[in-house]
Length: 344
Ligand SMILES: Cc1cc2nc3c(=O)[nH]c(=O)nc-3n(C[C@H](O)[C@H](O)[C@H](O)COP(=O)(O)OP(=O)(O)OC[C@H]3O[C@@H](n4cnc5c(N)ncnc54)[C@H](O)[C@@H]3O)c2cc1C
Image 1 (cartoon, helix red, strand yellow):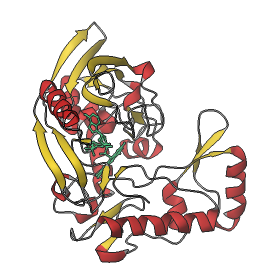
Image 2: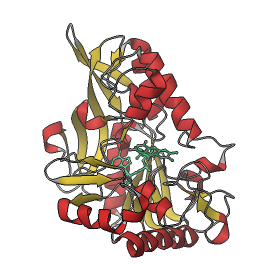
Image 3: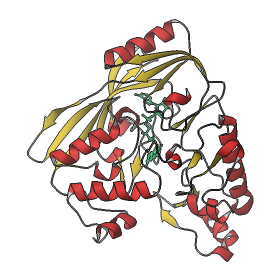
Image 4: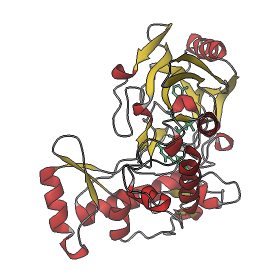
């Protein structure tokens, strides 16, 4: 499976199927179920860590393409996007058409159909803000249906779909605003780079170009020539701490200054995982076994930068970091990608 993942890791699958339409996706999944085999639905392979033993069943590669307008009025347009549509092609098209709402999510690898899985987000936007519904194949009921956004359980890097075998996403509806300008820029670093106040708006193409530039500088745009991008992006989510745990962290980090943090929903605080990792002694470029390493451009990305490592080596590096952060700060980091036949 290494050929199908951005980490270039993962042993063999028993069977590999390619589906180029929603009907084929359903058919291939049903056939595998009929054979009593486990099924892995895989698209861009940019958010999975597959074990060295591979996958003991059918991998269905989602390769459906395209999008169309399914509703519109004077102010908005709703596009239905096939699951396999490359995400950044969609974002580029929405920017070109003057549809606002996805521009800050430029440059994220993978497919449109995977974006609801972990409520993909970056630079102050997340797909939960624009998704109105998701067309799914329900493997439990054996039927195709639609789940409204309110029932998707969207949360920070999560939804009802993540770590669930039940739902296969066939297409996703996004409701976008007709506007030549971006949504208000919420992310301070992006606002600075665009030379606007937080809350300001900029032409869609400027938002896209600046996000792409910032991301490339961090190794967060896939580039076959840049091994710092042979990763799953951020390997750990930012820990969300109850107030008490946050105060404990502040005490333990008193000699290091204030840990970067953002208020979450309710009385919780989201803390920068990159800061915790760095301050626990794992700098950019920190090596692990077999040539895996922390990216030289971003503390949160773990890379297989020679392209020759095993999943076991990557997992060993991830454990070393998680345990080091826990020993130093008492905070447990959780992986962002979906782990398949491997554990951390
Ligand atoms: C360089 C880099 C930068 C990244 N930056 C970001 C970022 O800024 N923000 C962010 O949120 N993520 C980021 N990611 C992670 C990743 O790109 C996203 O999570 C993306 O949405 C994954 O899409 P994919 O098609 O590659 O999914 P895959 O890796 O193929 O699959 C991921 C999971 O979704 C499931 N899945 C995929 N398609 C379907 C479907 N149609 N139906 C049901 N289940 C499905 C898979 O079974 C698996 O569990 C980054 C990754 C890389 C490599």
